[in-house]
Image 1: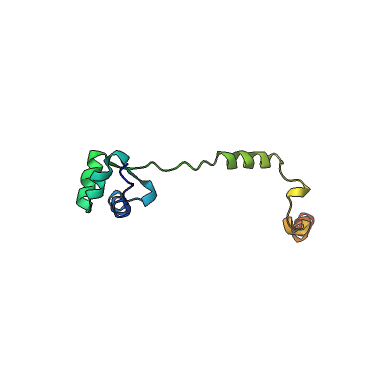
Image 2: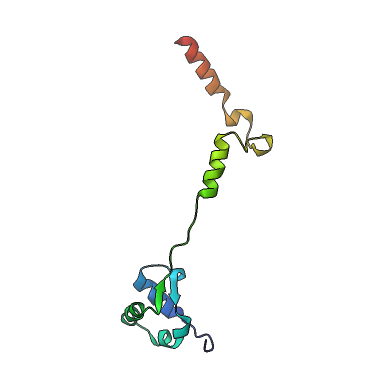
Length: 107
């Protein structure tokens, strides 16, 4: 790379043309001079067509770990005394228990 040219404007224009954020824009490091000379959206449409500017793929944010944790929790794991915040009453109100008991009796 020749002296690491500032490509701030170029990145912004490219993001605008690609309709994505600046973090998703890839500028070819081998074509820095070509990109540096581009200063309009029209130029960037051409660069994108030539493959010097690309849109990076979306980053994977997997729920696999969360799903595994939820499955374990449904089996009753991770619910010991050390994991509890809140009083017994806050976690499962005595009023609810009372209501259920009374409704059973009144049926």
